[in-house]
Image 1 (tube, one colour):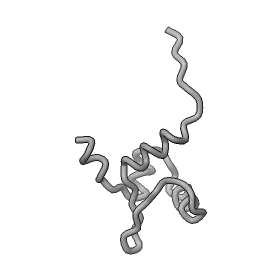
Image 2 (tube, rainbow, N blue to C red):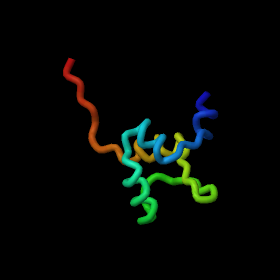
Image 3 (cartoon, one colour):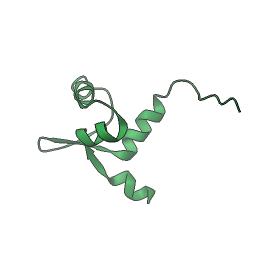
Length: 68
């Protein structure tokens, strides 16, 4: 299952809906040469779920603290 998810490609709107990342932010960061790695097929842009997860993990700040 994990292997299948690593190959699924999402468009900008799907990334926005699933991860809460504004599609204009994705476009701007692509244009500036930073941000999440992407694939361009013709005029369409796609992101792999594995690349999104890896990018988010690499840019995590702080730790969650639980007070149970």
